[in-house]
Length: 181
Image (cartoon, rainbow, N blue to C red):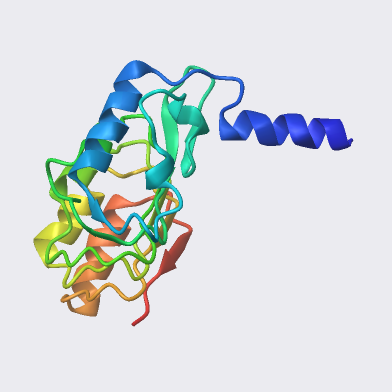
């Protein structure tokens, strides 16, 4: 039984797949556009052109080498996530975690709508200064597969009925919604 668990764990972390070059290029472009404190980073500092990106910390891939999971929680990121950010071109991405960063972003990048396969989005304490009506609608307009959405400590500047309407009409798969101050 222990061998099965180890094999399962290795597969999930990408041991049995080779990262596709376009996926690696998108991730490295994203990293190069980010501003982060390398002395506090445990993941981004280990992303390297010479290694398989499916083995990088915070990254998990499918068998074909497409990036499915991008977890950049606690990476001391202060800027670089905007509409030109390359992770929004990772079309197979299912999970995006930006928890506990300090992005200082006034508006959520609308390009996130490109992530049609996203099932999990966590922006807890990620540094969003305010989420406006049009941004929330843009966020969810193409995310019909989203099952978990965590917006804790995101300053949502909407009335209750506005965000409820935006979410309920666009997210039929949503089972977990976390919003607290």
